[in-house]
Length: 102
Image 1 (cartoon, rainbow, N blue to C red):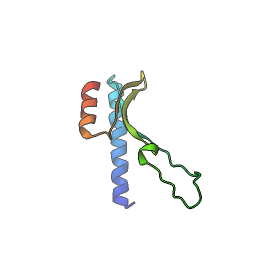
Image 2 (cartoon, rainbow, N blue to C red):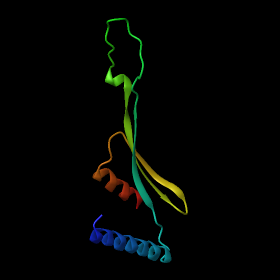
Image 3 (cartoon, rainbow, N blue to C red):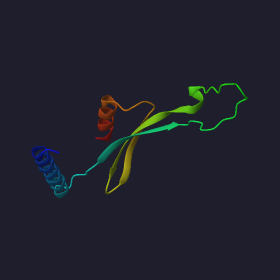
């Protein structure tokens, strides 16, 4: 990492910590928010087939989709608002989440 980039990162990190500490002193509720994607793919590693025949696998039989989750939590109240989507989260999903959270 170039020295200037590292210095910028350190300065921004310190500024963020100061902002959080100031918000705590003001009695503000701090909500930590993150998104995670859950998926499940099942690939058969071994299968039986008659001699001289090819195995075929239907993709829909082994892929069951995914869920995108946006959740927030606080030190005081633990996990709060959770939104689950059947698609990858978008900027619009995140904005809607923030509106509901506020």
